[in-house]
Image (tube, rainbow, N blue to C red; front, side):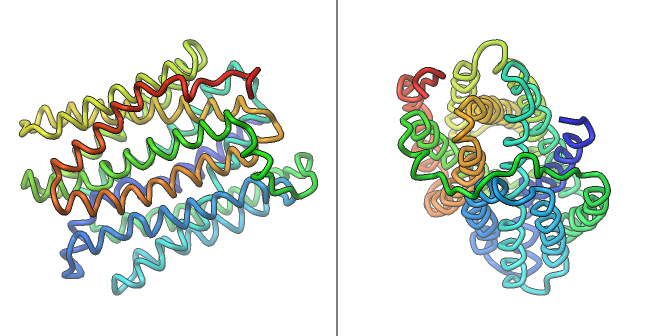
Length: 376
């Protein structure tokens, strides 16, 4: 893979991710602007994630038969327009529609990036490339979170809209054709789900993604209602999860190549478990900051380890695995955000105990998710 091509996909991931994490921090501000409940406005989280997850299921099989260059050009153009629509929305309904469209057309970036890395990068270097790829998304997410505490919430949507259109021009000029990778169209999910390792990986992925988003997407509301923190402080705390996530993706990718995928995944679960139960305590601001750093490291260790594991699957399952990586994560994430909202609205302590206990249980399910090439 040429460095320029890899760079373009990293930039796509950055534009895609600029406001994903920031939205959770912006819920209180958007709610105040539209004079609505924070839990009503919080729907913008899962109204993006669920359509993203469903749409992602189709992009892997789609680029098996259609040139991925054309698919990406169409998707990036509409994704950018959807962000501009969100930024200029005059009511919550328009904002909901814009996020729905952004989810559908933004879902192509990650599956294609994983497919190309798996096809064109040797197995002993994939973890590092995946770490850089996702590291770019966390750098952009960090920037979005930093700005969310400093500028009006509408600009958090307008900026990626403008940058996306600028990137579209670069893609049109420099992104090569991928016709050499084409073959007959095949919707290979029935075949994929006959593979036991394939099923185990995605069952695990569904559970861990649901838990992560059930907690992560309501941290802004938790810090606002339970800790009485300002919008700036809330944004800075959630920013720490993205800041540590950059190092988690890069370092976790390297460790996945050196120590093995499963060890990195389990290290991530352990960090996440400690953080969730720590939130049951009334902590000073400095310790909350430390918890957010560990939380970000835990999630990204788990994320990059599992994503690298997917690229080790047989080539015939690669496109479906890449699509399901995004599809399952975002469907589970959307459901997790919705479930988290229902539980956290009743009691944050109840939510932290329930989701923390599930993380603890996953540590004892290691044998169910062990992966080796021979069994796959």
